[in-house]
Image (cartoon, rainbow, N blue to C red; front, side, top):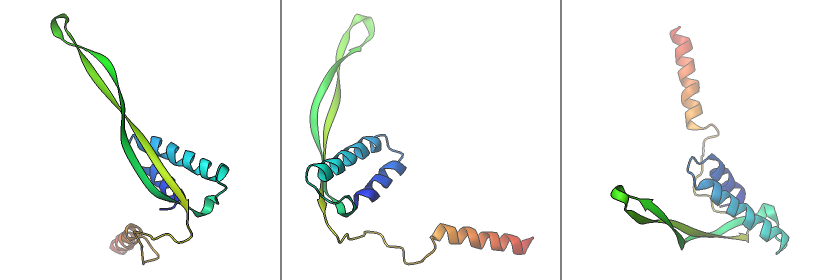
Length: 115
């Protein structure tokens, strides 16, 4: 997937981790352009991995004056980018008009006829 498409998907995603993944992708783009001298327009994501990191220990208070330990897990996100001209698209829309737009347009036409 092209890096621009991945950034758009991260911006539109409602998930909380999407902002972190977007920052990691932007960092990978900056490293590839500045350190390796690659072209930004031809960058694609080669692989993305998430690994287990260290966890933080926190105190969890219980009843009757007792306490326990709570573990706050962390993770490592690694994204590799490479320069490539040909990108295989997973989804292709053959029709020039999106299906939901066509349905809305046809619904408006039927509503106008009914009036």
